[in-house]
Image 1 (cartoon, one colour):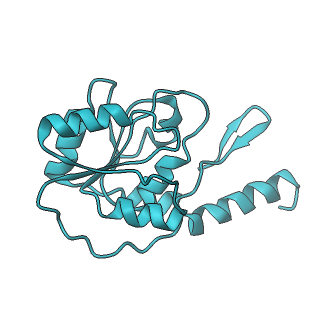
Image 2: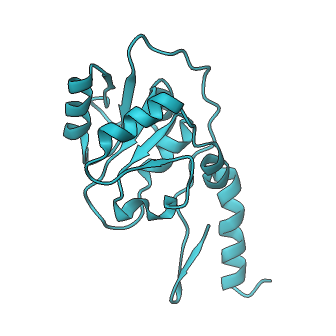
Length: 168
């Protein structure tokens, strides 16, 4: 939802509307990761190697959003593990849109998801435990996706715009 910060209104990045293909469980857990700056990728790879999980690798060249969502929709679990604290993550919206379980750390970039009960949000040392929990109970970010998807968010943006312009 839009949040007021003084005279500014912040609206989270929407998740693209996406109809994921039917999921076929891989023989070993497949852990997806996404991030344009690859923040946290080495840690995700290390945890996967230690546990015998496969990594759903980032493509050599950044793909279109639809291609990235199709890639992430193949994962058992998707991870966004950022060490930066500036702004709001747009990348996590892509993970949520892929509609597979999502694990994040407690970076301020994910503060807009702090109340999302269907996102596995872990402290800095909790990546492995977060992935394990997501693999065990497999909660999908269904409610968060419904709240964050583009076709829902666009009307919230229109309402904020109309309010700001005095059209209501």
